[in-house]
Amino acid sequence: MPGNTGSMTLSQAMRSNPGHSPECVEAQEGNEAGRDKLKECKGSEKPHERKADTIATMISGEPASAYSGHASLSKRRQEHFVEGTAPEDRSEGIDLCGENHQFAESGKAGSNKMNGGHSEARLLADTMKGRTKNSPKLGLTFKIDWRNSSHPNGRPVPCPDCFRMMCHVQDNCNADIFVCNDEGEKVPLTKDDCQNEKNGEGGYNDFTDRIEGVGL
Image 1 (cartoon, rainbow, N blue to C red):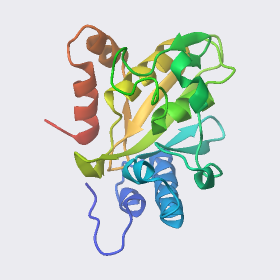
Image 2: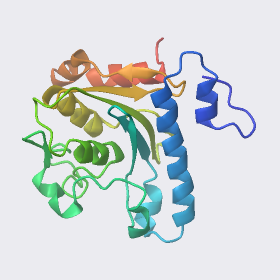
Image 3: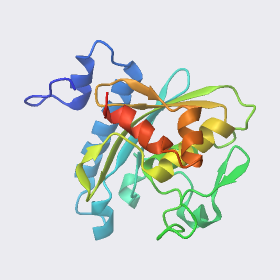
């Protein structure tokens, strides 16, 4: 990982890597702006909102546009972050290119409440509105900062449910999906990753290992 010393931000450190992707740097800058927005809002949220500090930014289209998602939205945050599927509609599933997608696995605790409420899910639901399998090819580049009690300093990977949604979009919405590592390099989501996970062969772990450089 590029050296990150003093007051250097991760986006600045990414730029020091000759192999960095401009989309990854732009997405990380979106995350950093999102963190600044959260600091402005601190104290205004309900207690449960202060725990869910995952942020993701997605770069989409030509010319590229940046969108930021956050795993918990208060009214003050809605101007900065993408909402995705409205909370009152999530229990019915998410419309992705004409097909209904259930974000969380059936019977999973809190599945109805959080069906599509994660950062990446909000971004995908918003971007896929009006698209079909026959829409022009779309490239989507994510930079993820997934934080919870198990990894409070963040991981650059999607959770298993967001991974499943990414696979659905890539398979059904004519999109190519990439997730940036902390070096600013794009890691492609492959058809093998998605199929291996469906077959119980560890496709999710393979994908996240490549993002985090495990075993490389």
